[in-house]
Image (cartoon, rainbow, N blue to C red; front, side):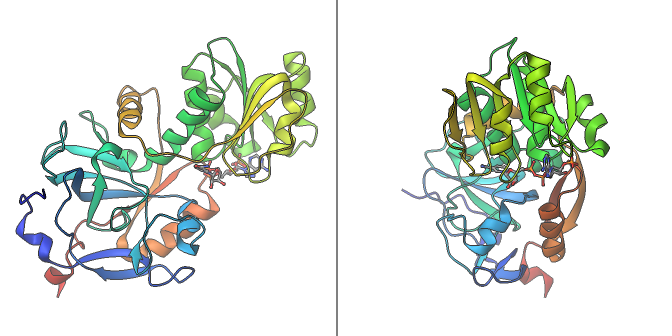
Length: 330
Ligand SMILES: NC(=O)c1ccc[n+]([C@@H]2O[C@H](COP(=O)([O-])OP(=O)(O)OC[C@H]3O[C@@H](n4cnc5c(N)ncnc54)[C@H](OP(=O)(O)O)[C@@H]3O)[C@@H](O)[C@H]2O)c1
């Protein structure tokens, strides 16, 4: 059965930031208004949506999100629930929520309205800023899968985060420290202070070619677990892991197995329940995400360019509200 709880405005076209073809430029598209909700879906009035370097893979077709252009891009958003399907429990119209959506049910999140699978949605605790809530899902879920999943980090262990100066890299540091690990991080000189402030015990400059050997010397043989967040960085990071330790990479560069080290490539998986736990940590101040600036939908291409080039560990968001209904703009 399908819900009949849709506001009238859904019939209106929606503006989205996206592409007409894979590899094409990011532009403002007029998209059909959201269809009727399926029983397990939530319709979100998007207030802010995250823009990450991973969106470039979606733009070029390298990340199959299950829909084809013309399409809005974007896989994370925060906003207000406008309507829910008739089998959705625990989420109601008017709730403030956040989501990492994949595969997409209809369109990406860079639009005024977004249909998400309810199982991928988390209700926000009071007081969490909408920009931070929009930028959290992919980095935090990825870090959670690495720290609690692939590396199985326990209190007292030593963990390396290679590439801690980035948004996801910083989330890896924060979560490892929160789990009670001693964190050794790599970052550039300009990022070292920031990476220390979010929980790294030691920060090594990755420009020094012997940094993996420095880690081995500091730890008496290598870290228990290493998280690689640098493109093609695993081959270096594994040198800093002790015999029989673990390495997880988020940049799809799994190194050859060596010295009994368990290796795993991690690809972020949407999970509303885990996301709910992570936004609680955000509300408590255990996790922080800094937002470099918010862009209007019309500047989505510039937002993606900023995210691709990195903004010193700060996240990028779009604010589509105010331009979501094409019909009302004419
Ligand atoms: N598998 C997944 O599901 C998944 C999820 C999220 C992200 N990712 C990928 O993970 C990577 C990192 O993501 P992110 O959000 O942290 O990216 P980001 O915010 O763009 O990170 C940029 C930072 O990386 C650091 N960096 C660059 N080259 C480095 C090197 N050779 N050694 C150490 N650090 C270096 C720089 O830090 P300094 O300022 O310290 O120089 C730079 O500020 C990206 O490739 C992203 O696509 C994958």
